[in-house]
Image (tube, rainbow, N blue to C red; front, side, top):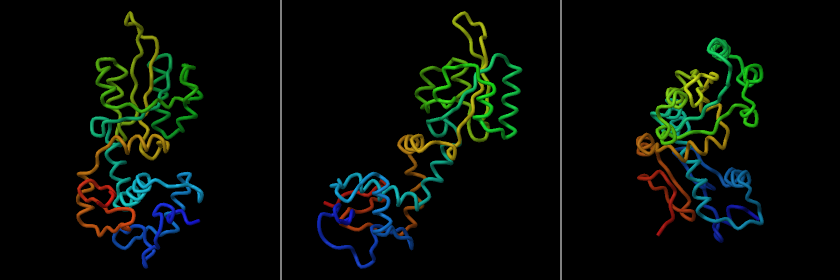
Length: 232
């Protein structure tokens, strides 16, 4: 059974066989079905319209260059994007931290440097890749050296070191923080970034200058929100 037909419930496809179109590029029925299959939808499934509209929206925004816009905003750092994803290597002293930073700056793979230098076993389960943090998370803990240092990281300045101090204020180690660029993020991280960033203003010019079509059985493209919405 045709997946897209299940979404529509009935009817046939348009003569152009296009689910959506941006300028001269079409999202064909076959490509759309392949995307739905990647989402875990099978021929036996009953497909809700909202997730399908979301997938069409994702495709349209991709054609408009949304991924590049998101990557640019995110890579500028948390002050610009509101979210940052860092990796960490804990070492014993400043000299070792400087050596670790130099290795990373020279292009040595993070995993290799981590395996050779990290002394904090608490990071091993995540291989040093910390959960992404929002600007609100950082602001709530502002004043702590590690947190304030984390806020400085971006693709332009990806490597920073900060002292780790105990409650008495004594340095007990140094953490080397590494900014994970957009290209280095996992799919899960990228979904978080996409859901966090508001790029509607950056997309506005692309939307205004594009010829965008959506098969009316699925809805229409709302240029104000950059989303596919239902008719009526």
